[in-house]
Structures are given as structure tokens and as C-alpha cells.
Image 1 (tube, protein in one colour):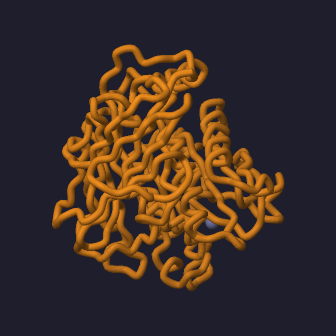
Image 2 (cartoon, helix red, strand yellow; image 1 turned 135 degrees about the vertical axis):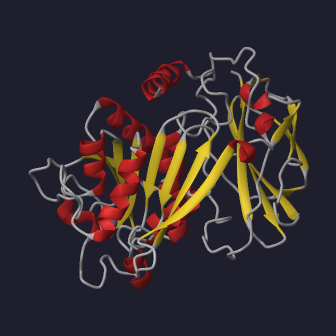
Image 3 (cartoon, helix red, strand yellow; image 1 turned 45 degrees about the vertical axis):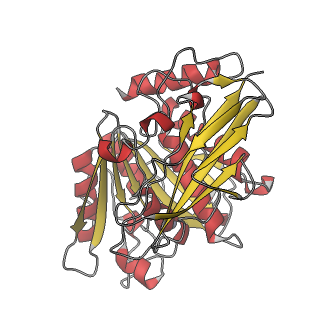
Amino acid sequence: MRRDILSRRHVLTLAAGCTLTSAGVASVVGDTAGTDEEMVSRASFPIREGTAEETTVFVTTAAAEGPTAVVVGGVHGNEDAGYTAAGQIADWPIDAGTLVVIPEANAVAVERGTRTDEEGTNLNRQFPEGETPETELARAIWDVISEYDPDILIDLHESTGIYAGDPTDGVGQAIFHSDGGEATAAAADAATYVNRTYVDDPDRAFQLGPFSNPENDPSGLLAHKAARDLGADAFLAETLSTDIELETRVQWHRAIVERLFEDELLLDGTDAGSVPDEEVTEPEPDASDDDGDEPSGTEPPVARIETRPRGLADTTLEPGQTVTLDASQSSDPDGDLVRYEWRVGANGAFDRTGETIEVTISAPGNHPIALRVVDDDGATDTDRVTLSAGC
Ligand SMILES: [Zn+2]
């Protein structure tokens, strides 16, 4: 299944562009509005329950078949962007497959704000390949991961230096990836995407790094074990934590994961199987739900964009065409929505409000639209569509 999806993605990437119109493709983000939440089931459970290391595993399962992905954060407790992003990713709606997220793998280290636990144990050295992990916590994490046997594993980290082909000066702004053409291509695509979309300074462009050989240090890494013991396409994303706002670093992590999922777990609102790759789902470059500390006990809202007429997000529009965007299918499970905010275009502010807005497509190309809804608890959710106009 996954191989088919990957093959399709590559073909579509080549085919995408102005010449590709979407003859008759009907199902889009907007048209599935209101159904996504019914089509995913969510569960969570603790590991290391009753100990200081107790942490939660979040599992989201889509109705549509698809690959299984595991996202891990907080293996190192001082790498805030990794565990913050993972905590947000645990809430993502997915269109297909199964998403397993362990946001705070090393809860003790996260609590302490340190790389290691109080014994100085580096959790990311406790996963020797072909062997049982070294600590109780590592074994509990590995039990979950091997049980779900993921197709994709992404471990989110940070570094104080930029990777320069050698880990000694730091490993930031790099996507390390398992061997194999598909993982390499997916990492390259994610790096290109995040660089183009979210990195202004070329010195901070994300690079690729292959996993080190099992004989070489560092060894015992979770992502290495997932790749080599389970055959997962595994990725270790590292952002630079020095002199960069947390919000930006979280955005980078989210964008990398989103792109690695694209066409696999995140189908951009399309029915599995049938749709061009040109509508890129834009991660939100804003702080809307990036603080990760919504009051516990409140349910976040669900943002949904529909187009009027329906289905326009999957078609090629004419420049000059006006589209109505309707947020009325957004909802809040435990209250009311108090604000609908829109951002039109890839950059800029959420400076339009209202349950519906009209957008006139002024130029050829892709025009990302984001809707942020705010509920009466102050919690937010964001949905996105891309309107494309032909050349
Ligand atoms: Zn780390």
C-alpha cells in the first residue's frame, strides 16, 4: 500500500504544474468538512504508569486505510520545539492510516528541562539495534513502537549548532534519514519544502544527513533502531535552538512532519488514490495553537473550510474568478466558536474575519488560504485549502 502511494507521489510530483488540471476530481478538503472527526478515532494510554517516567501515547486512527506513522518528541528534555511540535501533532486530524505520537518520551527530562534524566541517562543511546533496549523507559517506548510496527518514524530534536557534515559542531537544521531511495527522497523533499516555505536565512537551510553506520558512534538511537529492526522509513529532525524563537522552531518541525506525511497520512483532503499533488497543505506560520497549553479538560475546536461552489480547491480556477469560503462547518465540541479569522496567501496576517469570506483569484499559481477558529475557551484550530489558478 505504502509503496503504491509513494510511487504515485513521485509521478504526480513530476506531473504537477500548470499543465495539470484536475478533470472531474471532486473530493476536497472542503467537501470532507465535518466528516474528518467522525472518520478518525482517538485513543491514548500511559506507559511507565505510576512512575516518574509516566508519559502518554496518543493514537489517531483514520477510517481510510493507510500507513502507520510514529512521531516522538521529548527524548531530550531540553529540546522544547521537538516536544512542543509533537504535542500539537498528536491532535492532527489525519485522512488515512494510523498516527501514534509520544510527545514527551522522557517525561523526567522534560520536567527538568534537561537533556537527560537525573541519572544522566541519555535516552537516545538506549536503543541498540537487534537487542533489547537498555532501560525500562526505553523498553516501554520500544514495546509501543514495535507493536505498531510503523512504516514511518520521525523523532524530533534540537541542537545548539548547525550541522556541517559532521556532528561535532552540532546537528541543527538537518533531517537525518534512513537508507534507501524513498526515505532519502522524502527527506530531500521535506527539506526543500521547509526551506522554501519557512526559512529566510540561507545559512539556516535544512540539510540532509544519512544515518551513521551501526558500527560508528553515535549508536543506540531510536530512529536507527526503527529503521534497522523494523524496516521503517525513519527520520530524525533537528532544528537549531540558538537565537531562534520557539514558535519558528516548532513551525519547522511541524512543516517537516507534515511534508513527510503528505500523500500518505495527510491526503490534503483528497480521496485516497486520485488526486494531483499541486495543492500543498500549508502548515500554519502563526502561533494560534502553538503554545501547547490549552486548558486541560477543554476540547479544542475543529476548523473546516468549504468552498462555494463546492470542490473548487481541487480544480484549476481562472484568474479573476471569485470563490466563497465557508467556515460554517467548523465546530466546538464543548462550546461555541467566537471568532473566524482568515489568512489569504502564504504570508501575512489573519486579517480577515467572518464565517464566510469571498476571495478573488488575481493571478495564476497556488493561493493558500488558512482559517483559524477560536472557541469560547480561547482554544484554536486551523484548516487550510489551496486555490490554484491556471496559467
Ligand atoms: Zn536531541
